[in-house]
Image 1: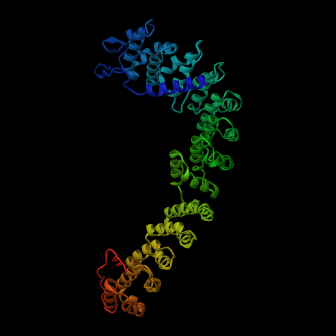
Image 2: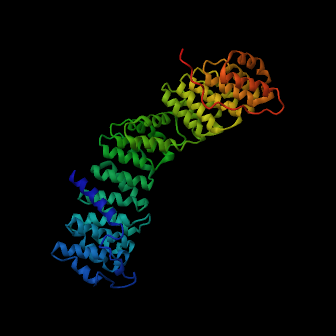
Image 3: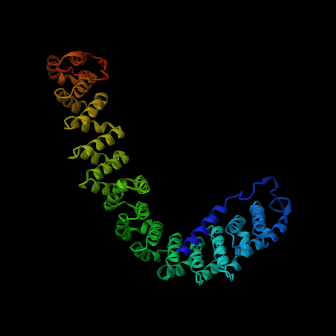
Amino acid sequence: MLQRLGAALLFAAVALAQQPGTGDGKDKDKPKEKDADPVVAGKPLSVWAGRLKDLETARRFEAAEAISELDEAAAPAAAALVAALREKDPYVLQLVTGTLVRIGKPALPALLPALKDDEPSARRAAGIVVGSILDGEASDEVVAGLLALLKDKDVMARGVAARALGRTKSEKAAAPLLEALKKDDPLVRRFAATSLGELKAEAAIEPLLALVKDGEPMLRRAAIDALRDFPAKLGPAIPALLDAAKDKDATTREMALVTLGRTSPLEGRVLAALAKGFDDPNERVRGAAEKALGKIDEKSLPALRELLKEKDEKQRSIAVALLGSLREAALPDLKTAVKDPSVEVRRAALQALLDIRTPAIVPVLAEAMADEDLALRRQVGRILAQVGRAAPKEVVPALAKALKDKDEEVRMHAVTGLARLGPEAVAALPALREFAKDEKGDLKKVAEEAIAMIGTAEPRVPEPIKEPPTPRPE
């Protein structure tokens, strides 16, 4: 455990130290890059480099801090900085490693011999710095040095090498990493899995699948994360990833959903798992599900149709919302969903249709005016009152029938909608006249105005009632 923590801390220290300006901020003393012995903090670089060997920790820290101000201009001191990788003080070591990383590739000739240093901590530090410098291109000499470190007797050094080899992008690294993935310490296997993913080594897919089922959470997470780099080859991994999406460890569930989201096209069982992620108690898991589902495209239509058949109405509602993002391509499915047994699904389908804003939805809305859910009828009535002219043949009978609705607001929307249609609503005049006889107050007045406008050549819209009148207590 201490070894694993040590490796993690050293990686974190290097990451932090890579940021420029880790010294005392005396940018005004920062020299030009081409200066062979630049001056910083009042002294030449060569003086500060010599002080890295000082017996006093405070003086070594002062030297490392001053040199760190130079960034890549500290290249002339690369050999001295590499020698300081044996440093025992973590703060000094952080400054030294960070400066070497910022020096970059010019530091590699001095770093490679350090991969064979007698001191294990120096080998580890050198491996981390080399890995941090690499940007996808590595010479045969660098790859050979890291492969040798992968066989080191120190487990942390092997872990460092395994991680750095992924950044070489070298095909020569795949087979040794695959061997380490199968047999080495869990720490090494973890970094080997990550690197094999970066290398996109297809030979690693089966072993990575086996690791997903491993009892060690750290290894499961590393394998799941690595599989994400093989989106076109994820089919066989889906069952194991679906199991991982139910893992008791939240991070494992999160990573499983992220990787499942990379499969294409999304299968119904994958969509179902992603949809269930919306109910996860962990915020990061919910975020992973939402992000994965945000990449839905028309290729996912078959899977979304499968999800519409789920018994869980929440999953069907999610399917409807996702179908809405596909717009016109999903119209037939959304029209079907408006008839779902669940009112929540019907509401979701209606909202999705409204967001599409196409005349093709009007007949569907007209049919929905007969829905048993009051809130849905009110919403549909309000919309039909505005867009009914797109399909008057379907809308007029629906609005005429809605004149008998028990809800006053629905009836008001029906009257207003018919009035907007003008002469096209003539078939509804008998129903409107009966309605005007039976109603009182504002509704009666608006109905009479609607009757008059339906008989004119240029219909006008009656004054809408903003709020339905409050019934008087009996």
